Length: 504
Image 1 (spheres, rainbow, N blue to C red):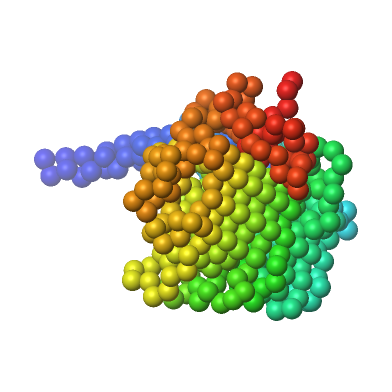
Image 2: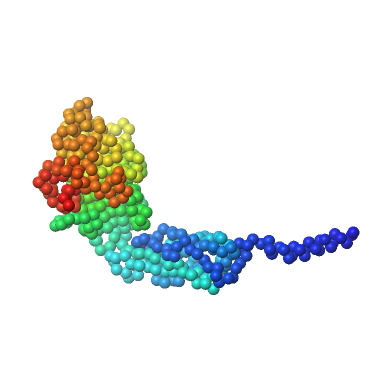
């Protein structure tokens, strides 16, 4: 009996020696079979247009081992074409190459790809293609994933105070980081077709004068894609960001700035479009003339200025400022299309406010005016002057007009020959300190019937009047304004709003 226990122990050791390798999980056993190939989440990692000298976002590439057993990837590396503008992060390790990486059976590997493009002596004004490849070597197999980025040369402005009488050319885009200052007694002129891309929080501050497309006199139709339009947007160029509001700040005019002009311009995806910031109501009020301009996808996400003055954003926002706005469109403004506080003059002629805001649950009137700043217990009150003529003010809110404390400036509110959505002011006569707007040729609470809105279409909205629009021909001719937003001629019986309906 005393020999049985040692014999049993020896037998157990022999059995374990034979059986233990079989206990290793199958997914950890390496296969060298050449048929065990890798699979990828995509065969091409593509970056949208990238400005030179700026880093892209990280793109993910998943590498899958669909086999039951593990594989050893002998090498992962960039081919190195075009000066290696691409960088890899492989399982948390950075570098252009990694060796001998094991991927367990039915498991995966994550690679993050970034790019920083150089100019490479490419054309100034056209995107250029930069390519590379990630090479994978596994069990004698060579597999490739393409890397593609479209680069774009640009003028870069980093917290820059511009020289006086600066002219921004249109041969390549302008990219703003931090901000750009147009100093007192100086002027910034933007040529037709200038493209401006602003990083998060960036914008333009004007203490002198801004002139956008000041001399353009087109002879034919100016369609939305016309290359002569000056365009502002954020610097994220991936398609996901095409219509995301609040990506950059906006254009701000400070006290003392000289009369500025914004013409044939498209402002989108900002916190505010144009802001006059004059909270102390210094005279003369800064003045901005706006013509043939669109304001799209605007939301401020609780902006805070000095004093402090909290606010949410607007296409046009004035704290004691003067605006003349003609033949312009406001759409998808998350809080306000036009908002004027503590006085100022707001003249809107042939404007369309089509503020359906499908991205927001808006509880504010698109056009809002007040004699005070939006703060508790304001110490200064200045009556605003508001004139709305031949315009359409419509949207998803039942009251798209609001005149705060209107009894103090009732005589300075003039609304004529316009289509309005309002419950508050639908009476035919002034009463209780409120204006009655169902007069002077106005059409109250009758849907103007735009061609394509969020109510009847999912995308590609079109705020021209439909053929059967009840708003057609309800405007009155204005001798100084004979063309519409797209530079089409107004008829003898013109339509209200930014667009003149053209019969097919």
